[in-house]
Amino acid sequence: MSRSRVRGRERIRAAVQTTDPAALAAYAGALRPVVTSLRTLVEDATAEPSKRVHARAFLRREILKGIRELEARIDAAAPAE
Image 1 (cartoon, rainbow, N blue to C red):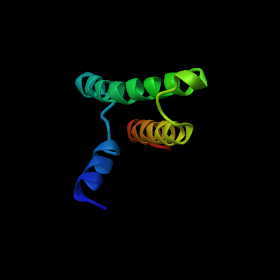
Image 2: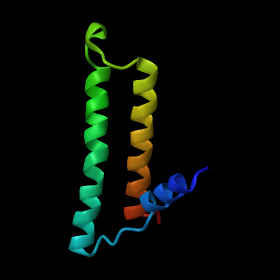
Image 3: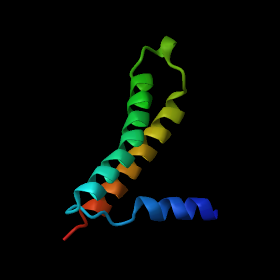
Image 4: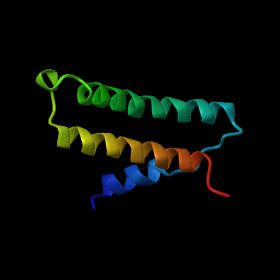
């Protein structure tokens, strides 16, 4: 695994200070591009087959990847008790 992937995964799983409003705002801002990407992929996936830009396999893989990233970031903000 490359160093940039490892750093990216560590950044995603970094603990979030939910009691600090500035840290929470930064965290929410970091989630926005992930949600925007997922929205674009889902809109493509639910379009009529003749109007799709990407193949179903690509869309499925990328949507699941985005969901896993969201889950990891949520877990970082609210660790299991």
